[in-house]
Length: 435
Image (cartoon, rainbow, N blue to C red; front, side, top):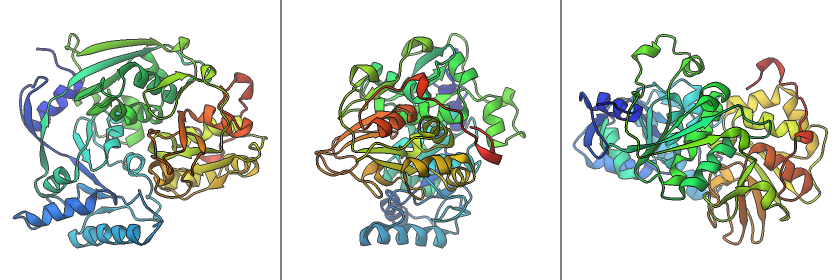
């Protein structure tokens, strides 16, 4: 029977001819992602098992990113424990603070070509689903599961049914992947994707969206309760990963006639800039309908919104302008490579002259960890993925999720406000080229 791409990947990883939604399978895991926030408990599980150590030191990637640089003694202790573990196990891929290949794990594993289309990626972080942008099954798991994967290299999965999202047309100038994924969060709600895979299709995704935009789409699948998000791998995928040893014809692809739990279609030309209002990523509206609230902080960063093209978008609004008085503008690149691109292009001067504060690559205030947490009564517009009460600091703060265009406009006006085409300016991106 016809299968979705997710079903084909899990069947291949399980050594089966085919699988269907609801099947329970043991699947081989190709890549395991670990970071500081959840790994210490996983190490305890590993040490309790009758094994000598990790199943394959080449396939476990260590990336401390949540609480670095350490914000307090507890954070420093966690960092020391995970790095001691990485050294003791002789892990091949250790991305340490300050290294040229350090940053927020979900972006760096893509930049460093750790992802293999058509395989299974798991990580001790719910936003591991961002890896699905490269045509693989990517899922976040708990610390107990992570410890067992460290030991065995495989894991039990229930095959998810798939939700298909067909996005068609050329996006208007101010509509981004963040607006599209926010639209989907409003459509599905917080549990509309529960135990399902969100499969992104259509000419917008396949023709008009960059790989970084696809990462944005897949990253927020978990906000609808989904197990994973996924895009079909194509030439853009292999070019980004520099995997010219792979043949597209050999990679899994969904079959015509495959069964979907539901199918949703969007003519992107009709979409306007979106915003998720406090306190849910699923409470989504056109920005123009909720404009007006005074803003204290604008935060451009995180795995979702701290990629190169996110900063290019923000720079197009901020160029030649200064932030509003009383607004804190935070620039938090998601990787060292992204930071270096900013510093060697016109973007650095744009942000500096606008009055921005720069942070080293870190998850940071996205989860209330470091560099820009919110105080009581603060209102923030942010390019991150969650705006739960207390997520970025005080439970009395209010958080709006938006695209870099909308966030940058808020920095200029000091209010939640929809961007306009007249706000956009051309920027020179330097020797590194564009997104």
